[in-house]
Length: 88
Image 1 (cartoon, one colour):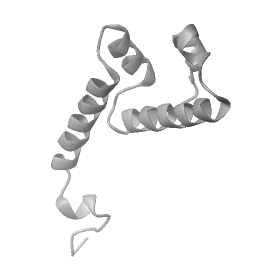
Image 2: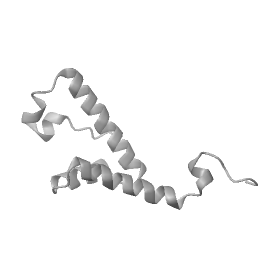
Image 3: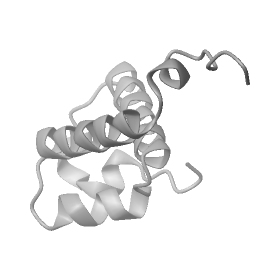
Image 4: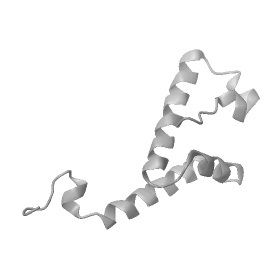
């Protein structure tokens, strides 16, 4: 998450109308999306490229959700719940 991009760097005109509080909320939301991306193997730079190529934010979130489901299905159900199977 070291590569945080400010909203104004991405779209200079859209950030001008945000209040300070809205800017903070947006930055926290972006940080959370970046964290989820990292957890499922998608870097911040890859997400930026996807968005620049025409993917909407909604579509990006769907994609990350699908990746999360794929990873979750690969794990044993007990591991997902934070429990280890008996005997380990």
